[in-house]
Image 1 (cartoon, rainbow, N blue to C red):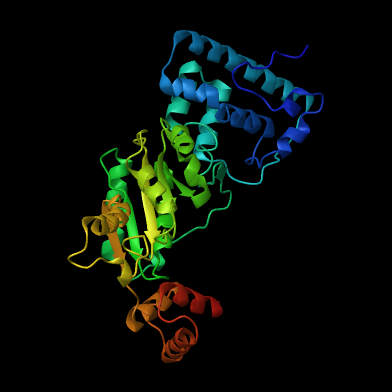
Image 2 (image 1 turned 180 degrees about the vertical axis):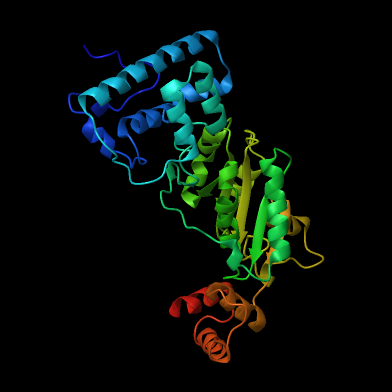
Length: 363
């Protein structure tokens, strides 16, 4: 007779049917006995249960969770008895997965509560990078950005890291704008935060323009989770007649709903003031107050970011340093130096992006 399935931890339908093996192919499992990993994943995927325990620990729910753990163990034993399988994994397990497996094998309801309070639930317990376009999508193969290739911007990186360290520690941190010339590494500096701080619970969520309309739904999803989320706006810039910048200004600061304390805005832009304007847009000194009000409204978007970090353009010396860094060399020989300069002059000038492109031609 089959054991009763759990009530609070939903199992994939295939795992409940006569042939549960296809359920092992739904997600790439870690190395080891597959049924335990699949059930541990089901524990991490139980969003409603995790959310309730993140809010509190009612005694009735603890009792039901304890019953569910017993049922999961019985189901695990049945799967092992009826479908004995060896290693089907293709990767190493993450910290949250090991913790969930320990709860499955020998934990009680209090251990389950501690699991959710430390790691939250999937996908946040299993991934470190996400894209929001109205729907949250985990990035399964995020770019392994390396801040070590960024040369010449050490003070800016130090200020960025200090602000993020405050954020991770639960202290007040400032929404941040990285602005400056193209190809200077602004986006790399932000994406490298995930690599630097991912093990400390930092998650990177790139918010795409089409996702701004549904931003409150994203914030509700992140609120109360144990992770800390950098909300990343890349290449932020608007034309003066684009209504999007006014909407974003309200969303960043001024909307009725509050920002969750575990979320921090970081944006990159080639423009300090974010909204493009020409000399004709600037009123004369004696112009009517309404004309100056329009200027102030455009500046108000950039004012939403309390920390501004400037990335000035590369010069020849900085470009050559960046090439050497990408090649893992302390100094370029004369032939490589001349080839790098020819490449820059024939391509897009001196920038960190050009330095990487040239280094790639030599690999």
